[in-house]
Length: 501
Image (cartoon, rainbow, N blue to C red; front, top):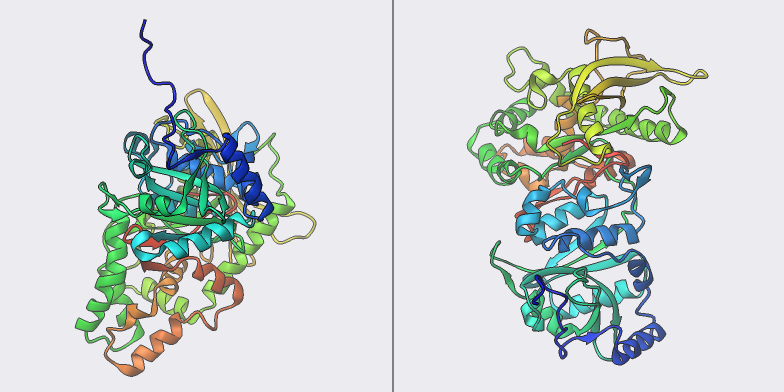
């Protein structure tokens, strides 16, 4: 009786050589002797099979992130923090990936969101010699890994677009080892690098763009502390286009005479859904056994965030932004949070999302409701008071307490239950978020300003050269620029906790 379904595929050879074959083993031994299998050991330790037919990109990325020992900052199951395909949903909903797969650009976005350093290349912006150089470099160390996006049909395999990590390189035969995450279909195999390049040098019909490869490594520092850009919502493309294309033209068409007028031009025409684009990074924790004390690690992270916030608020640009937003006739006062720029209201939303994510249900339709929030000051052993917003989160019949840790630039902040306290100087606020965004924009943004003296003044205000090192690093990881991957690439990362979208 015929059995339903498929059981594996025969690996077309040539061009591939099965890793477990006699020839494959010989290639492996020779590559080890030549020192180009150093990345293999980390990758094979975390080798996984994609859990859905269209999850090759997610499986490749989670495998690489775990091999690099990047902490996701949130629990997978039980007490364990671990990257799993189900957690990689910040740039594309999992249901969409499950149905259609994921594009090259969105996978690059996911890698950034997860806290990795990413260098991505489409084949029309690279060469086979450059690809070979990167494969050899990453195969000779265990601190970077290459994920290839290629068309299976070029390798005489069934299917079309596919992602998999490269687990080694044989210099003598110029072959790369593909650790195929669709292990139910094909085993790991060696392929000639030239043919793999041809398979990448292929147009993805869903995007109209070439495929390519990406180098993924650990960042040299912790990810961004306070701010992030989100490409989860489709609106981000239009907003990024406004900032990159439209603002220079607007400034060129307007006779701006001072900094306030420059900022007014930028802010007044912002798309109405701008709040979906720029986000802030929140640290949320589930309170265990009623204990509200902060761990040394939490204190250190909060102190770092507060230092970044202080440095933002000491910039000359911040003073201009704050003046504009606070002026009585300004139409720009509620750009980011609108009527919700109120700490208890923000915390209620954040605690609900935090409970959902920490429960491993970020893509779930289950309803989480925060019934009550309370703003408190925690102070121990003469230390500086720490602002914590506690929330009671209810999901059905279950109830749990969540805490949101709040960075503050003030030495003394009022703390009480309810929403009547003054939260000036606390993060998030429109003035510090917008200041960080303006510092992130490239110098060409202001090129349309006609008045030479004014252009020099704005360039001095937005220049990152004289910023403190910590703020300089925060801004550098947030540059928005055109690239061939997804129209715009967003260099902004998760914090050690997670991003609230």
